[in-house]
Image 1 (tube, one colour):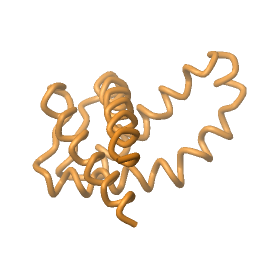
Image 2 (tube, rainbow, N blue to C red):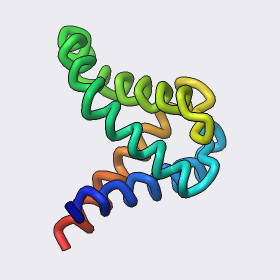
Image 3 (cartoon, rainbow, N blue to C red):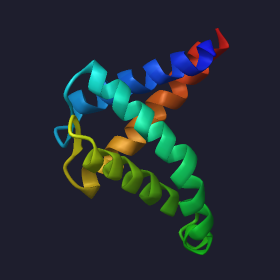
Image 4 (cartoon, rainbow, N blue to C red):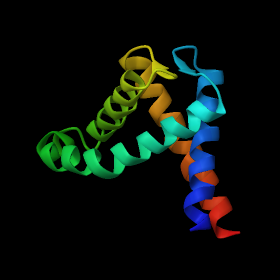
Length: 114
């Protein structure tokens, strides 16, 4: 549907923005950002729920903060499998994942409701 396509473009633009403000995150261009956003979306839909389920005890012990680690690891993982999207280490992945999540959440909330 149109909402999914809009969300995909928002996610790609968010990746471009993250790569502009964080020196440790690199995206080759908008086409690469579209691919990276698609792969990130698939990984977050398929892999993330399994990781969240398997790490419930750690997540409870850390009062939910371990979810940030999961998001960072997945962001870093996607950066490691795509040539035109790169993340230079866990710290950049953590920052990148947080900023990416905030931007996509806010922009999707605003634009999908229009």
